[in-house]
Image 1 (cartoon, rainbow, N blue to C red):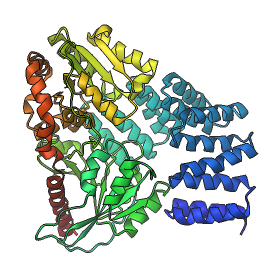
Image 2: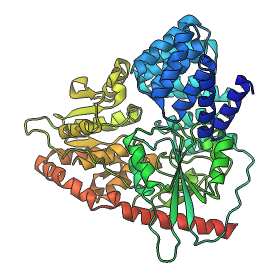
Image 3: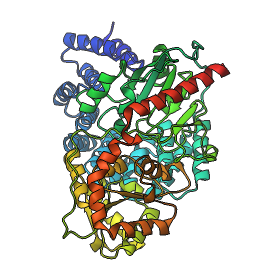
Length: 585
């Protein structure tokens, strides 16, 4: 067999979900042809997909050293360096690739991504625009530009570019997802956002044939979990309680969990912990839609729970093929998928009261009292309070995209109600001067003077991040897109969170979390109530100190951290969904 044919077969194996076989074949080929740099390239790419990044870097570096004027070799090496967090080295390789061949457009995509990760938002925008000038309406590069614009606070501009590119690529699933995700940050109406999600569902629709299944309502079920976030990521803190397994009740045969991981991160501590909890674990990131569909079917999954929705790295396009008898979307995304093949969406009566069905293509599976269960970080420091001499400080550690004009106006009401208060904001994007300036400008337009604001970009560890809550008296939720992990973290560190409810799931998550811990008095129905709650809290620091020292225990005793109770509720809910499916078969 020729080398070229052997490489093609290995790549086909990888795309079909047979990564171990592909790796074995290319390793053998590399031993026979150690000087063939195309073989070294493919081996490096497959090793990266399996999570063996250092070995991947070794082989790809060999190729660059052997053929230093090949821009594609530098591009592939840079992609692995990005996966390893060596962003500056990646940017250097990509800039060199463009210098060698300015027409090599793939390098612009990598360079835009690298500069974004280096918190150089203007540099990312410039690289993306340079690439798009050579290849207009390129979806992947458009998506990177949209992300850079989002972090610069230019969400409406990002949406306009995304929607123009969708007109040229109406079936590009990930571009659809990025457009839909950004709509959640805007003031567009819930009806308009829901209509756009339904349009996505129609655009991505595929002919499908659901798998045959054993229609026994009470039998043991194989429950699959699909996500790109089985790692140290906010979604994992809510997925962990589920992956511990499901409790069987007297009239049910129980469940077993099967994980389909879209990103290989074998050295990540959260990945190791989650992997230990699953009955089976499959790395499926390289599989195309047809292969992923087949892998889920071959695993005999009865109920597939996808955890990403339209967030980046999702594979909703594969779910358009209906790979399991029951498909549920849960936890990660605050809106409908729009896909007719997704049967249920996990919510609760706070996030989605009666009537919310109008904004969902799925049936709503209400998991009361809260649709989430939080697994606090094990290395969280003990709560500490600001010094008695410190000015009263409001704070938020939410993503910068959530701090739009409506949010700034709401926060301005709180600061006006407490004239001596300051505002502490922390998020990674603030490492970039452009993002900082844009945020300060938005706050100023809302009436919050820059001298009242402190901006912090990031911390080295989760523990250091959590310790910063010791500088905050009261946390302010974002609006209309609430925080989730940030709200749980604030409460865990003893800091009350004030939230303002709206007309959609994303604007009601805070109410659900606070109700789960018995803090309904911190939920405001309008802007006036939000400011009033903030002022009341600011007037009694002694009560805040008492709350700080009691909140963690309060969470311990609440449904929000009751993993066993949550699994039982989840098990009952999906058993009901399964019985419904059997009855309709």
